[in-house]
Amino acid sequence: MAVECSSFHKKRLKMFGFGIPGQGFYSIEIPEKSKVEKFSSLITVLEGVGTEEKLEEEFKNLVNDKWDFQVRELSRNEFRAAFPDQGSLDTFSKMSSVELALYGLKIKISKSNIDPTASSSLKTVWVKVHGVPSFARDKEIINEITSLVAEPIKVDDFSLLRDEPIRVRVNCRDPSKLKEFVEIFFNGVGYEIRFAVEGFHGGPKIPTDKTTSHGKTDDSQRGGGKTKDGPGGGQRKTSGVTISLMEIRMLTSMPVRATLSMITWKIWSGMVLLIAVIPRHL
Image 1 (cartoon, rainbow, N blue to C red):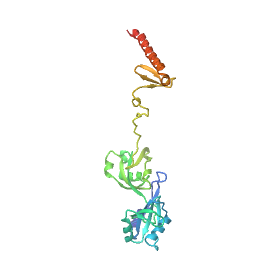
Image 2 (image 1 turned 180 degrees about the vertical axis):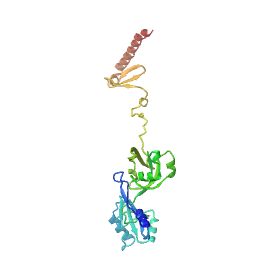
Image 3 (image 1 turned 45 degrees about the vertical axis):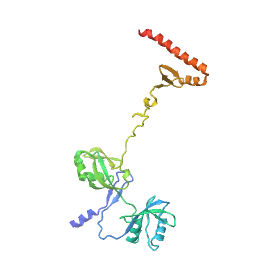
Image 4 (image 1 turned 90 degrees about the horizontal axis):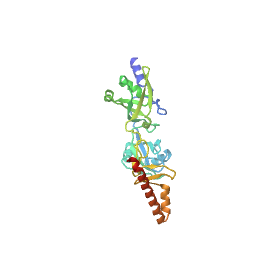
């Protein structure tokens, strides 16, 4: 009876990933008593638009018109197919690409160990678990925590002992979605546990040459001078004499003699102002 109970628990259906919307799945491990030989392949469409029907026709025309290749679409450009024998699969998988005659598709055929009748498969990655309190850094507890976002396979024992995020190898639906946090209560006290897939990096944008770290334009990138707004549409400070942008526009549209007269007047006005100010500081 004990043996039967132990066998029952091993074959128990388990739930993983339901802590993140759209990532949940049911899983059960079943030991293979007798392996059925299936020559599964992964088909990658390099050129053209492939469908299950098109590829089925192409393989019947190319390999064996009596065989059901059981083509299944995995993504927009990836399909699975079952070849009739090891020889034909070996032949086409050695080619860098195969051009098909009926629909003009260009494909790449690779070997796969997944049943071609399967609807989908899980991705295996390493995740880092952040924020676990020191008293909860235990392998069984980490497996329970990780099961909220994925199916735990192996916990890195060294990361448990160090003061760093805990590494766990997992099976999941979409690794790019494992970037959320889950609040877990340990003995009634909540902690935010964050998950991150190894190899996925993100951070604040680095300021460009024309902006400071606060997003403001650096005055040094404008040529070194300060600019102030004014009724003339802004003023430019040059050599101690202030000339407004409106006056600059006037200078460019005036005759040469009038322009020189106006510049002379501006310089003379500056000198008079300087003479008037100096005695106050003596």
